Amino acid sequence: MKGLLAGTTPQVARRLLGALLVHHSPEGAAGGRIVETEAYLARGDQASHSRMGPTARNASMFLGRGHAYVYRIYGVHHCFNVVTAPEGVGEAVLIRALEPLIGLDLMRTRRGGRGERELCSGPGRLAQALGIDSRCDGIRLGEALVLEPSPGKPACECGPRIGIRQSRELPLRFWIRDSPWTSRAGRAG
Image (cartoon, rainbow, N blue to C red; front, side, top):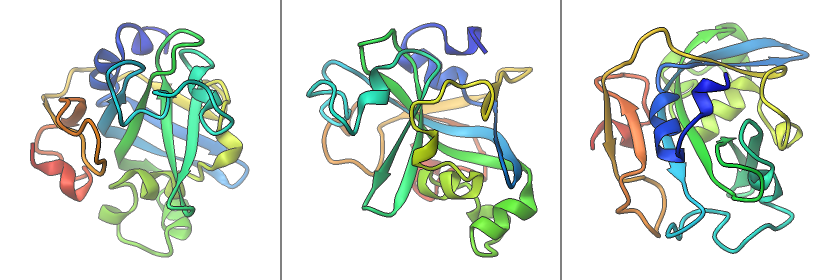
């Protein structure tokens, strides 16, 4: 996993495409292939949670490369990020979508019986399907949350991030070309 997280945050966001993400929870394992990511930077990125420095909410983003940063949006959904910079810097990659491969029945149960296409096509759906919540915030990746590199390099696209208001123009969203598993808005560049 070490080589998977080496380099700049945008490089890691691109390299994570095709990697396998699995959450081993008490209910069982659930996971899939990463098909869409977004990078969030410490400098020049008004959409990044780290732009104002460490707070109680974003403290995990500053723990250093290889930790999980999990936060809630709209008071309902959790979002899972991989911390990608050295300790104290505050950069991460949001995992936006997965191709569901492992623990499909468990994911369906967690998502209220939704079809495969709706299991992990968006960051909130993905976290719910994998059972990722605030208990995962700050943990070191490798035991409960495991990332395994892709055996090959999938063809990918790059474009502006979605679902944010500030710094939208930055080309920091990456997705696997022609993947049917990306978030709905993630298909178009």
